[in-house]
Image (cartoon, rainbow, N blue to C red):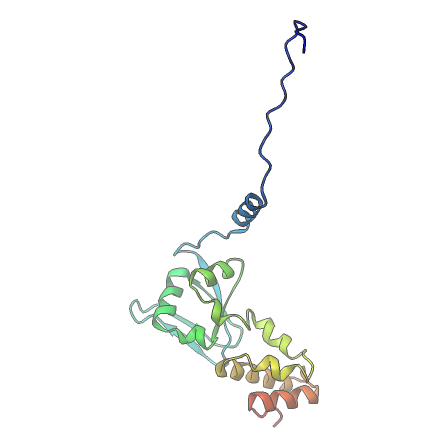
Length: 182
């Protein structure tokens, strides 16, 4: 090329192409939930019929739920104490964590294995929308305590005439081992 006296136009510097790995890392960072603080509060809903009481043996902190579906707010710190001292609240699915930060708290407390089948009180009611053919397989995944909760909820709905499909009721009775029509 001949020198014409004009400065050569600079080409813009090439930026390295984003690899799919960079995209994955950025997406993971964007969707990563921030770790909850010990003082963060989360809504804790009772999945137990009748009165349910939690008492921290060390501090005396007490929460009482009077009815199925009642809720109370607890700090992450208190939930750690519950998990460490009275794990049955989670293992037996006596309580559910709900709200915007519930998933992050469940992950932080490593409670995922207890909440694979029920994640909300609405999930229990949705079970009754299953067909009689689907119900036995669905119900087999629940712990015995969760089955009792489901049976009590079904009994309440039968008594209130909100659950009236006799085929569903019969399958629930057989699968759960509870008499729902008496």
